[in-house]
Picture 1 (cartoon, helix red, strand yellow):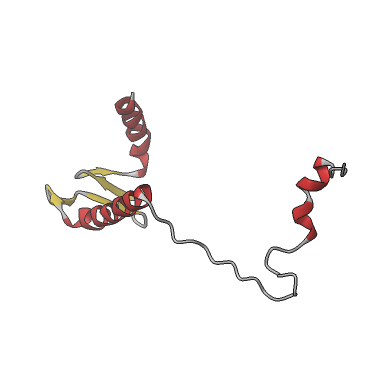
Picture 2 (cartoon, rainbow, N blue to C red):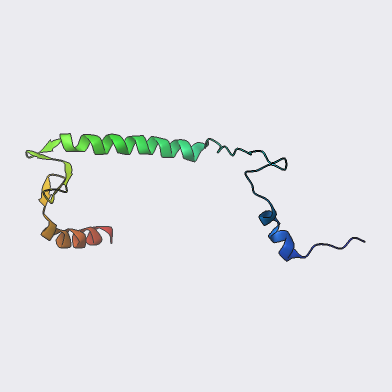
Length: 101
């Protein structure tokens, strides 16, 4: 009966060789597979939708203000036509927490 290798040496056998070099010493190229499937397609469609939404919302006006705009340089944030300045984010954060609960 042949003796089995200890589990410790089997678990670390991958360290004996480099994965990108063949036994002949040539380069073994690794190419990733293209993702596919229902969830990947759904994620792709959602990302396209979100890009369209976030690029078009600043051009839609509500009461003369954009629907959504984050002007970081002037520290002016417009969300659904309401202007929020940096000192308003404490109130805005409490409102968001109350809305989620």
